[in-house]
Amino acid sequence: MKQHYQLLIGCLIITAVGCSSAPSTPPSRYSQQHDSIPSRVPTAEELIEPEPRFEPPSRQGNRSYTLFGNTWHILESSENYVEEGIASWYGVKFHGHLTSNGETYDMYAMSAAHKTLPLPTYVRVTNLENQKSVVVRVNDRGPFHSNRIIDLSYVAAYKLGMLQSGTARVRVEALQPNSDNAALATTPPIQYQAVAQFYIQVHAGSDLSRLRAEAERLQSLYQVPATTQKNNGLYRVVLGPLAEPQSNELLLQLRKAGYPGAFRVPVPSPDQVGQQP
Image 1 (cartoon, rainbow, N blue to C red):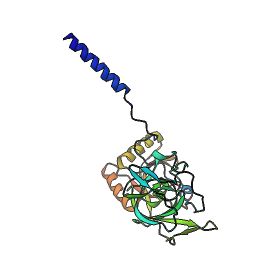
Image 2 (cartoon, one colour; image 1 turned 30 degrees about the vertical axis):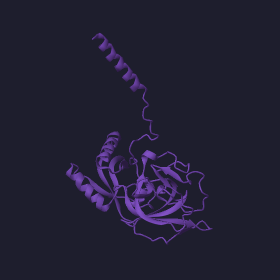
Image 3 (cartoon, rainbow, N blue to C red; image 1 turned 120 degrees about the vertical axis):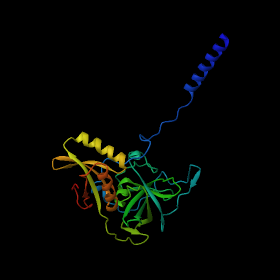
Image 4 (cartoon, rainbow, N blue to C red; image 1 turned 60 degrees about the vertical axis):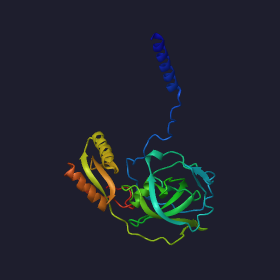
């Protein structure tokens, strides 16, 4: 019996040593497991779109590559490129990390990721659901979901009005600069009427720490951007920005959830530099 007991103890020791020496999962280069929305909305300056200009191909990110069992071949030219499909966006998780062409991803810059367009390429992206459009500079690879064609920066998604849904059906058109560095689209750009957006104010007060904690809670609960903003010497918690239909829906939810005093505030247009809602 004693021999059996000693043998059992020996096996347990070997098992424990084996477990402790097993290789652990390598840490991710990202600080977050899941992507998230930043704590503030873009400024008027950050909403300015880049002007397409001639740039030589990046030294990195312009060779065929294999990922997740699939191989992608880079297009020789972006000329006449037009495609429709689903767009997504990426934010805080990737902010400050290197893009595929060796630059640093800035979620407040008008940029995008594409699987096969040459880096860099300027494209016009039009949200086919609300007809808003934006010019972005493609400097990264992705998105690697079979049903998506482009991954937009946070500020570009903000301007296209697709933050709440996370994805949108879009048209992507490559832009070609001429010798004077003026933007010439593969098809003439269409001028669209801007769609009104709103914040929803939920709280106001002087205790900034408490209001910030409440903003984080509401952002996690309703999965929409939530921020604190100065207002006449105090601070307020606002959700959004959201298009009018989404803001109406969320406002009803908030009032039913115990926020009877919640109300909408119009978002200032991009040309209202320095103004707060």
